[in-house]
Amino acid sequence: MSPRRAIAATLAAAAAVATLPWLTSDFALSLALTCVMYAGLTVSWSMFSGVTNYLSLATAAFFGIGAYVTAWGLGTLPYALLVPTGGLVAAAFAALFGAAVLHLRGAYFAVITFGLGELVRHAITYFEKTYAHTVGRVIVDVPGSTAVFLTVLAVSAAAVVTALAVRASRFGLALAGIGSDEARAETLGVGARRTKVAGFALSAFFAGALGAAMAVRWTYIEPNSVFNPFIGFQTVLISMVGGAATIAGPLAASVVFSLLTEFLRLQFPYLFLMLLGALLIALVLYLPGGLASLAPAVRAWLARRAAGDARG
Image 1 (cartoon, rainbow, N blue to C red):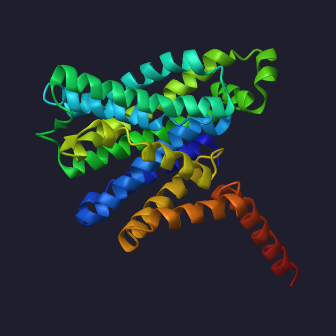
Image 2: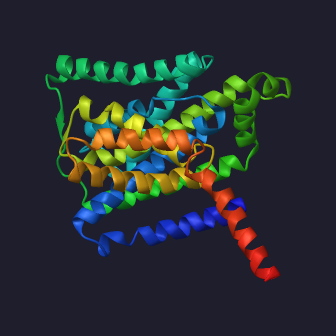
């Protein structure tokens, strides 16, 4: 599918999903909100890490930064302005951090990005205790659930559209070249350092915007909840299960994974993490390319069946 058709399909799907607040119950809308949030997080993560092979565990840090932008600014600035502001603050922070550490690769980069989340969490905890004399913040006068859902949907749809546009651009080709062979990409004229920082910051923008949009869903914000490492790990796992090198794979996996997690949590509250871990191990062992790797096999099977019907 061409990028234009894919973008048109994305916008059409987003318009259809936007009708859910008037068609479903509050519980179903809450599940849909989680699915939409992780769709945006996984696609934005894959936009950078999926093509460059830089395993970033900093999603929770950017998400938390965006959430605290809303927690600190709500009441002074309108919600519609706080969401992009949270994304811009997260992107600026990612650009500064990326300029310092994006020369690292592999486990070193993964470990230091995980440490970034812990560093920011402790820094905000210290700031809140020292200067605000509190650990968390109570959020009042929040927009309704419909407004929150539509805002999160808009940010996630923008992430998908941006990812599609990036994949079809010279910038996307540069990121893919870095993922294939960074040294060779540099010899071909790619400014690897500048490209990596820009891609890392663009990915962080959507994570920060989603954190800012989701912050009003909770009436009480504190560092341990919004800088939760589980958010970052789940984003990475969903992307890998769906196929981090694709866009459709993480989108499909975000829905399946979010619903499965909720089902396991409700049915097996004490065992769901073990069951989830076992399922992920099985997927990594027997489906290493993610759900997206099934598409060629399905197309080949359909082609063989069509050929058999034609001969018959």
